[in-house]
Image 1 (cartoon, rainbow, N blue to C red):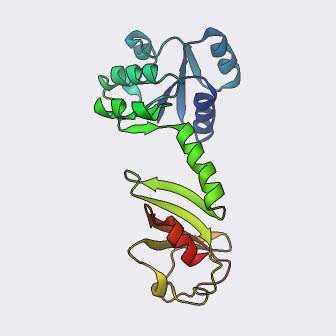
Image 2 (tube, one colour; image 1 turned 90 degrees about the horizontal axis):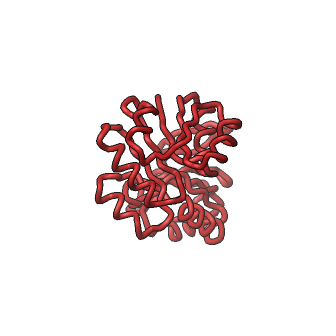
Image 3 (spheres, rainbow, N blue to C red; image 1 turned 45 degrees about the horizontal axis):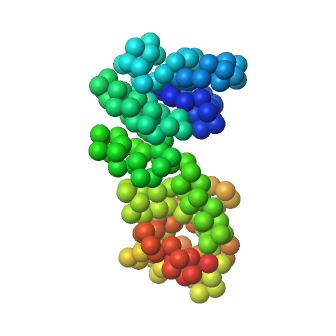
Length: 215
């Protein structure tokens, strides 16, 4: 799989390194010449110095062959323009970083559906650590309508009960548990043990209620 990343800052560089570790073919585009040299020395990938808002440079990066184009610069305007340019090359997956949440609709209006804000994501995770310190959020589904979380069962009111007695409900469903560190799909008649770690699909707005019931 071939992935082009625009932006050699902290986000782009960290992403590139993670994808390279996973075995993906990466090209990184960076406009700053001094940063280009630093990134090229650190990254085991092709680094192109230039603007990702240039059609000529995108073609030099073989944009027609890309499976993903990911714009990670700190400039929402540059990210938006590059994504608009990339759309004409029929790249299957286009992802953009957005710093200002007010700009998210602009991306979606031009057909860029995968818009991510690292700043907002970090803030949400920090908020989660304060309000639900024993809950780990794994992923968000759809348009934020639900999320998969991980928590440890500590409530004596559910310890010893069967999974089918407490799940599913209109607010959540327990989708996995762990035995000796291995994921297991819980069976209806299996009983719940104290300290058991479970993965739960939770509807938006019900996390506090679910945590109170299970923790």
